Length: 632
Image (cartoon, rainbow, N blue to C red; front, side):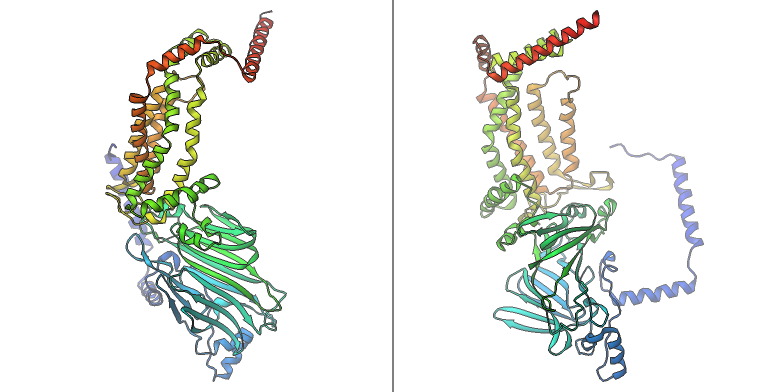
């Protein structure tokens, strides 16, 4: 790439711009009093916040919580004026910002008294790209959970602003945390969390007791769940590509919102909602489907932000589900899942959660679920992930080699016929219809089907596209190294650039370069077999031959290195197979002799061929009549 050269005018221009910026700063600099006020404000903010990503600080908004001394009758009456029956909860010792921790070997949860919801979710066995523990929720700053409801004394309350009383007990080996928002000792709204050993799934129950006279049954109780997806991967842009809302509705149907922005996308009979962040997912499940639910997905970071290595969050999700009272009470059996987006783990729950993993739609997903995932598990049981990818690629290419053989054989036949096709083109260059007739007649006599080279390629598409979805979604490749790639689920880097190239990035990945070279060689071999003079209106094959590897180079520079490794090895093996077919298996002289022999044999035409011939002859005759009419 040619370096940019700056002339004197450019230097002067930059100097002027820099001078203007400095002058603007000087004119707008704060007074000493403003500096002192801002400093005091900043110190107060820093005292309230620990090291939290800047973009998450304003996500969770809470009203001023009310706490009262039960001995202060005046304060208690004031609290009743604001909270009604729930003023009792504000007078308990638990009415303070304090969290209760429950954990097992894989998951640690902190549940805050204020709001009773999970304010921290830590996955113990995983690290981010920069060796920081994986938090799906951190310090309550990037998530919130709230019930908004009306009371019979005409108040609208939010549970996120009220204090729950925690109680920790044991149910066998399970840890149970009960969070109760009390009206009295025997009347309350309860969030019940039950954590099992070595499980990412947490039993979660919302129920009320004795609140028939408190809830206003004429008003909807809305449950709101919000989450900002925290960055965990080296490439925020690549992680963002697989960060989205997925949900199940109408029993076993599933859908997703995609990577764009969606506001109030509604669905009925929703049984679970997943806020997926590529390799980690937060899911809310319910045994009683929500009659309707609305979802919002918002891109916090734009394309330029995602290239920033300091970006901490990428998307903001929200879901609103109305809850129904039964006999004036709430009673919903739910579950929380905080864990990896691992197909095997999610599939074991038998609740259709494997659909959270983007394995491809239709036949592509079926191939991955029932062929590639089980087979890759077998290979991975005795091979390192990188070697397992190579072994899988070799086996796939060998199994598809008969298809490659048929494709190459068809190309070889077309190559033999090329001189005669060129002769026909020259002879009838002014008569497209006649040229087509003569060409089809030649194919028929020689026993060559020009489509037979395309069909084998089409047969391979489901396999290739399935693998295209499999490798970026394979959790077992995450943070697994191979050769110079330190993480097969992210891009490999052999050099960092001091600048960013649009659509390419600020680094150089070697696997995409190798894959592009292999694709270029493969295309030279295949297009060389059938390369003819470009026809009007037809694509320029030489242009495509050069463009495809270039697109591969740019497109995959930020993709998972495991996928680029697969394409490199796959095309390398295909080149080897084609060389064997060309130099060992296929004899072009024998093919030529066979074609000449076929041309001498009387060729019986089928009904379809006869009909096509008749139609073409009719069209030719009609054209001649039109030309005669014009001459007259």
